[in-house]
Image (cartoon, rainbow, N blue to C red; front, side, top):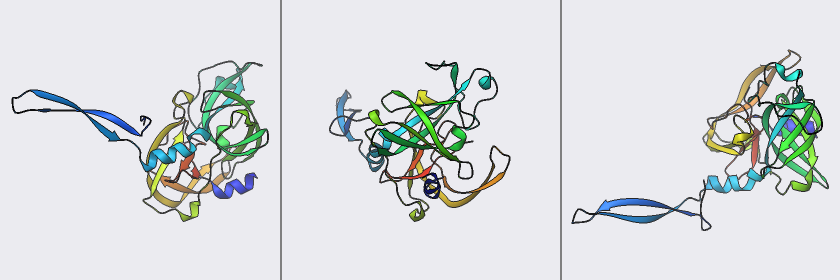
Length: 245
């Protein structure tokens, strides 16, 4: 349920053997340059954490009519260039991120930010494999800035697991995954640490009401378009939902 989620959230490439080849050069006694390949292990705790969750991270596309989308883009991030929807005059107005947290029969559920879907007249979700599926809004909570969507589960193979955000410690690793600057950069990964806990952040919702949010602060880079994507701990568990607005 949405109210349950509100209590939980807010907030590299290698070969098959997890090694890569780097080239180093040095000189022998005759002054000749000798080139040799050195194997480098590219596997790490961060890559392992990303592997656990990245297939559950999606881009959320906010569709609005041409007249509706002629003004400013969503404050959460990237205003997408117009691309007409298949079955109507709706166009991609703006984009954010989301994470699949539950699969139930033919339906899967995605959590994102409320401001990502604000004003939507239609929604699409871009999966990790590049497949676009239609999404339906289940519910929103402006005070926690959360929204839940549902999609067909046919293309869903991975569901995110959750950690305990109340057990976080300042200084521990934090990983942000999402679509900074839009789906062109979908599933981008940045990493840092938990910089602070229980930060009081004041914002204004769509009803011009002042909302105080108890947030996690991280120095992992979070850009417009990352909103709604997961903040992940070193175990690959979701510990928060990123917000940039």
